[in-house]
Image (cartoon, rainbow, N blue to C red; front, side, top):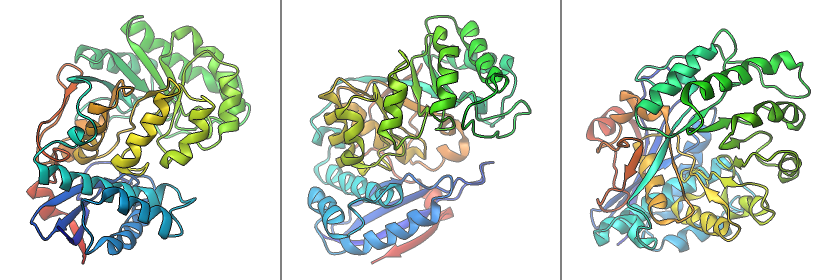
Length: 391
């Protein structure tokens, strides 16, 4: 079997997010088997960087045997110069290609990828409702007032979710995107995010898990002010409370709070995670299979974390392809304990991208038995998207 071409799709997107441009690839072979993968850096300001890296790396694999997944991964790492020391743009491209190769191998053998990673360790995995500040609905609504946060949290609980995630900082009092809280803050600046979290806790009661998302919008100084204010709310874990790439800063926060800390969506490869894991600076790591280096690397990162009693919650924020990628790893890795159901997954303009519908039932996912990653682009998405082919 040989790789004959790689199709790079800029997937059509009609929703309100202006900086949301999904990128999915299809690796084609002379046996007629094709594999899909997603590059996870398409949102924010990474779209064209991801496209460029995908074009560069796709040229390197034409003519190779797609079954030699580890050989190709090592080629990217050892022989491209930028594989060593490179970051999210490069490894988002690696992730898409690596996943597509696993998809091909699974399809060629007629089994889900998780069977090739060691098999299932669970039948289902609970999901949490992520990014409730956007309204948790088919149509996005930017929430501002604490009572709105309370109502949307109760809505998610009524749908069967036992764990919720909220960024209480992202939107200001008018419901517009606010400023980052960098440096020491007047305590008045912290009152609204604290009030939002208190309203949620009062609405859903003590048994629902609350994850506080910071998106690195704080630094060590402002985080040290904020953390004591929310500790009485029994926070499940605190995500990206400071720079996600600085072990030393994370260590400072670890020393002053009893709340579990989580991070990892912007960290790539086992080498990037190594200082956070071996020094146990995080209680939960959050690699993104579409960014960290693909299924191959996500499995290695999770296994490393297991040796240090660190839990895994894979960051998942993309199309149905990204969801399928995460589920393959979550099915097999014992220390993956919950799946991120991002509010973007609710949107019809996202769901139509996938050939198969894959949503949680009463807050839990089951695992597809379809071969490969169990998901492909729909015919409609392929026809509507811009495609560039490398061959």
